[in-house]
Length: 103
Length: 197
Length: 269
Image 1 (cartoon, each protein chain N blue to C red):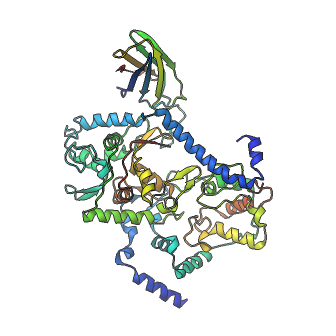
Image 2 (image 1 turned 90 degrees about the vertical axis):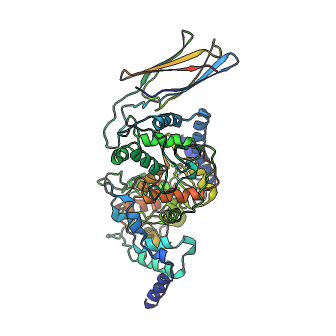
Image 3 (image 1 turned 180 degrees about the vertical axis):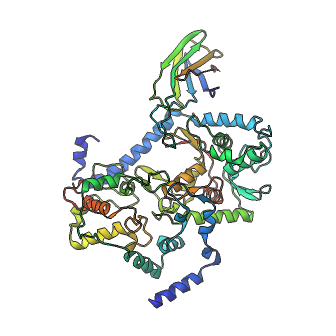
């Protein structure tokens, strides 16, 4: 089971600012480990955020995104107390979903 | 010579007991060999012992002279008498920071890692300041026999002129071979070298 | 570097003095900008969260959590404990730093084999280190805590003396000691600034910011990791984890930093 994301969602005026720390190795497939062996590519390909049943954010990532990505985005049309859900899927077919309440 | 030996003997006996205790014995238990970095690297030669015991600013004159003379005697000039090699190879040696670490391939030649501590060619802005700038080294000093010999000496064994120098003893410890030292001399002295532009 | 800029530099020797200060500052600026983008966030938080889980979960052959682990302030007291480490522990009759103490608790309380823990002490991508996660959690609980190391026990004084001896010990093919690079002000290797570890101010700047999320590796690294990686670059053999020198050197540097407030886990290059 992949490690949970740390998500914070704060309403400022009409805009919700979402910050998420995502635990993922984001291996490019070009790195060599301590023994000199090539570490296979393993990174998040898709990340989406939904709130109140509608998709408010979608990203398609590649190997150039850093390890343990730190994501920040804004959207409108939500209120404090609403729940936002972030979901990612990676090249190995693994997936992780985490929820946060908008403050 | 005998007087020097007596002075040193007096110095060593005047030290408090714990300073004389072999620190390297206690250190040994806290380290383990890894690849080419073996435990014998913890054993100190006389220069290292003296430079551990005394701070650079508190070096007694007799000790400083002892260190200089010990290290001066190790300097070997180039076998063919030619000091200058190839400055392009020299620049590569100055740039390379690997060699002799437990993580390094012992089959590959070591670098001098000169840019870690010194400014050299103008085009390289990523340089350190642990050592003085060597920018325009040859341009500022010329290339007389004395200057060439003094610079070779510094590269070969820095402690011959500066006891307890921070600079590694590249020639004496075999970190760089004769050809590599010549290439570094060319980097410093060749009028066409990037260092002198 | 753009050719025109390089051309302007040539022959303007005096300007170089200014330019190298600028480029060193530019490298620090890039790091500061990176930190600012995070604001109060830090990827180290992922390790802290995992560490908290590991602390609280019953694990290992003895199926126990670390709730009874004594980090020096009493069993289970995590808050502020790191700021008073390394210290003497009567149960092991040794001076221990955080890494050593976590090993003690994981082996004694939870029954994990010591060798297995040592094999995975430094994480690498998918292969995670429980020790690093636990260290992040414990250190995070000392945020703002003032470093206090009274060194009342003779063993603590002896450990400090060993640390001091190690700091100045010149050895290896390059004649390097810690002092070679860390005993003067305003020095750098390439563009990496070197903290002066022989003054309270310099030692505090360095010590209060470890453990840290190391950007270049994408890993959280502890202070012992920093020490053993320095020794690697000094061309020394491998510093043993939780060894007397590792603990003594940490104690020596922490003592110099005494009075500083912990600000870890931080973000480093």
